Length: 470
Image 1 (cartoon, helix red, strand yellow):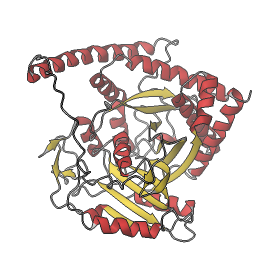
Image 2 (image 1 turned 135 degrees about the horizontal axis):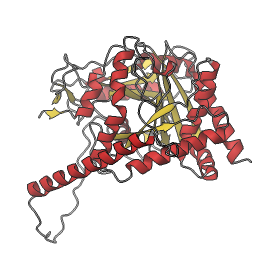
Image 3 (image 1 turned 180 degrees about the horizontal axis):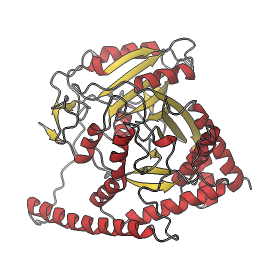
Image 4 (image 1 turned 120 degrees about the horizontal axis):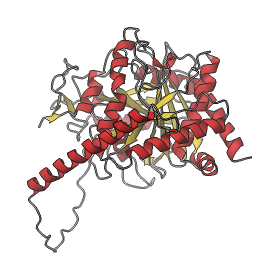
C-alpha cells in the first residue's frame, strides 16, 4: 500500500544533492564478552541470508526515485528487499584505533544512499583495537527522524545480558500477547468520522490562532530590546554558512550526565541550556583559532521532538526554536545567561501551541534556510542573512544499560547531516549515565574538527569551575 510523504518529509528529498545529503546516522560500540567480534559479525551475516521481509518503515522505497524534487512523493513496499545489500561487513586497517574509525565513518557518511531501494544502510565494522564490534547505520531523514531512528534501533537490544535474543532492528518482531479485552461496555459518543472531523477543524483553528500570536511576537521583538526571543535573519554571516563539499569530518566527545546536571543545578537552568553553553564556548574558542569568530552571537537551531509517546514512528514530527549561543561574551557565565534568556523566551512562545502550530511556526522560522541553501550552493550565501549558524540537537536515548546477544552496549554517537549554508552539525545522544556528542563538519570548510570537540571539553571545565567549584 502506497503512503504519501508529508511536506516536511518531502523537504528533505528536495534538499538532497550530491554535496548535501540528507541522511542521519549513528555509531554504536558493543563490548564483546561472548566470543569475538568476527564471530558476532558472521552470526549476523548468516541470519541475514534467511531474511526476505522486514517491518515498516525499513521496507519502504520511493515510487519515483529519479525525481527527488517531486513535491508529491509516495512510499511503496520494496517487494525485492535484499537484506545483504542493506547490512554490510567492513573492517578497520591496523592499528584499528579511534583515528581509523573516524576516517572510515567520515567516508561512509560522505556517500549518498540509493533511492531505488529503501534509503538506509548498516555497516558491521570489525578490527577495532579494543576487540569490540562497531555498528554504523545511516537512514535518510525523509524516512524517519533522528528520535524515531534511535527508538527503533534500540529494539535490537535487551535490558539484561541473559534476556532472549531480540531481532535485528528492521526484522519483523514476534507477535506479542494481546491484553485481555475489558468486559465493560464503553459509552457511545460521536461517530469516529464525525469526532475526527470536529477535532481536525478545532485543531486547525487553534493552530492558526497560535501561529498568528507567535509571528506577531517575532515582529514586535525587533523593536523591543527587553524581549530575548531570537528572530529570523538575526544570525551573523561567517564560515558556518557557506557552501559545502561532499566530504565529511566526524569527531566525538563524551561527558557524564551527572557532571552536566550539577552545573545546571548550580546555575539554575536546564541540562539543555548547559549543552548549548558548552557548544557556544567550544565554538568561540575554535573559531577564534581560525580567526573567524563573528562579533554578533552565533545562533543555533534547536530541534524539539513533539511526537506523542504512543506514536509508532516513521516520518518527521519535529518542531524547533532559535537560541543564542552567547559567543560574543568572553565569560562562560555570561554565555550561559544569554543562552537561558533566549531559550526561556522561545519555550514561552511555544508552550501553549498545538503540534500542528509548532510545525507550521518552525517552518516559518526556518523558511529563509531554503533560499539560503540554494544561494550557498552557487557561492551566493552573502545575499540573504542566515537563519541560524549551526544545528544543535539533543536526542534522548535509553536510560538503562542495554545488551546485544549478551554483550554490553558501550556507547552510542549520533552522526547527522549537513547542507549548503550549514557546514557544521552538533548532535548529542544520552545513553545510561553519559551524554555522547557527535560533531559532523564539512571537510573543505572546517579543518581539524577534533579541536572543536576538545574545546567543548574545556568549556565544560570552565562552567564547572564557575558554578560548581566556586
